[in-house]
Length: 98
Image 1 (cartoon, one colour):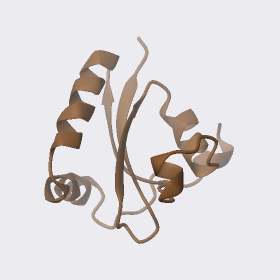
Image 2 (tube, helix red, strand yellow):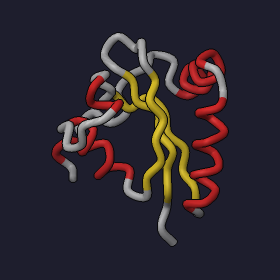
Image 3 (cartoon, one colour):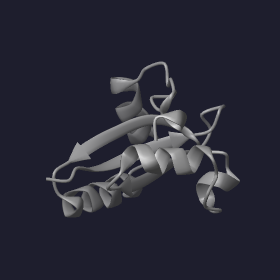
Image 4 (cartoon, one colour):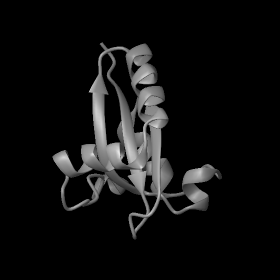
């Protein structure tokens, strides 16, 4: 079964949080890091993966993404701090693993 993910990206100063959903996390992070697509994430230099969740069903991932986007920043920061308190780039080294 194909896995799906929701993920949080931020910029180097952790001032912006971008939330996305994908069925191929490594490929999508590579696209963000190389700025393949022009949009919110590239405009605000969001290329640091700080949080992600895995799902067996893309529909559940989409529901979760919408739920997280509707929440406030403090709640998003809480999720990140729980799993990644130093806000390190979880996608470090993925640039060349694709």
